[in-house]
Length: 191
Image (cartoon, rainbow, N blue to C red; front, side, top):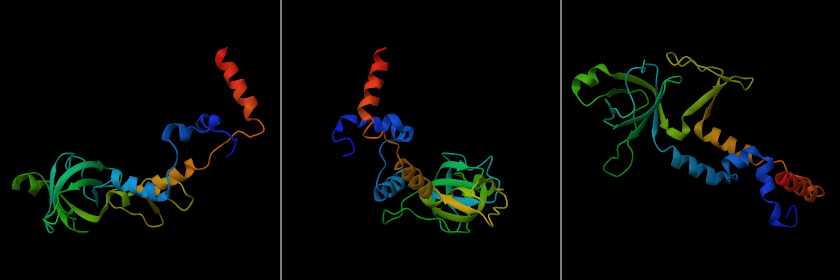
């Protein structure tokens, strides 16, 4: 125990904005489980222009796989569509094919107009959240050509684990100074 008493536990939150805002860090196993629970859908990536179609709530169908679902959200900067896919007969989510064409809409006419060809498909938590260059800077990509050569993707899972790991690096008050710092803090609160 750092201070030989639990009375000063609040100083960890006082000294560390990340802990105060996000709570105590989780183990990596707990973090992985939480991220999988928070991001349970499928993410498909396309070079097609999806600015005016594949809107949240739209019904979608894979023209080859027959997989169906609803659009949850889109990331136009990365050409991504997040889809809650419907369950198959075994109760599992169906997956879209890596390079299949998907269509949005409930009628044949809508589906003929609202199409996109996929270039990738993954679990939502394994989808790229952003790309970094060799210097480690986050960079934009062109969603219409998806040129990512020389760039390193950071997935949703990796980003969440990295954030959780940063919470583990905390600032503490030296044990020899804790009583004087706490006393001064409460004295200022009374002023």
